Image (cartoon, rainbow, N blue to C red; front, side, top):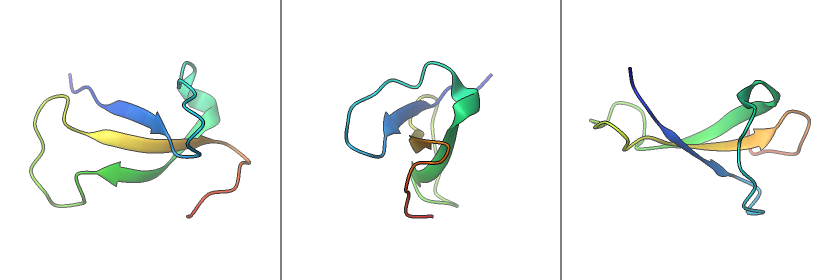
Length: 53
């Protein structure tokens, strides 16, 4: 199993409790970079919110 962390991309600091109503709009590390367990950080917003994608 692989675990990642998520951050509220709006900057409001909300916690992603129920993941079905959030979408990923960014990630760290970037695509193609090596990643270790727990190193992945997903930037998320709630569905319908303005986002950079």
